[in-house]
Length: 73
Image 1: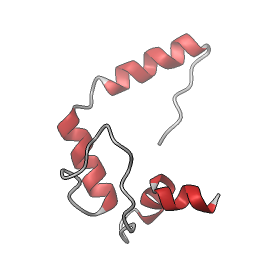
Image 2 (image 1 turned 90 degrees about the vertical axis):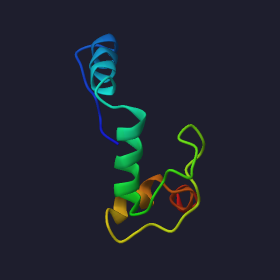
Image 3 (image 1 turned 30 degrees about the vertical axis):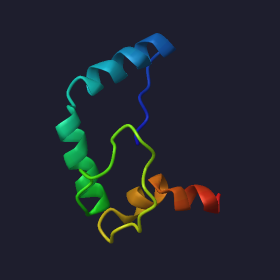
Image 4 (image 1 turned 60 degrees about the horizontal axis):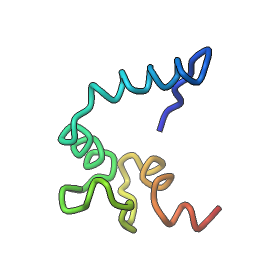
């Protein structure tokens, strides 16, 4: 997760669209697999994040996206 800011909402959304144009589905899957420390190709990219134990690598990222994190807040 990262903030995308602009002087206006329109400018921020234009920046977001530009950034998203650089990422394909396969790139996104590779990034998620790296962040979660496991192969994420078995999961639907458009579905909810599966309830999996976070890996030691990128632990805080995985924990912040995990359904378990939502249950703690």
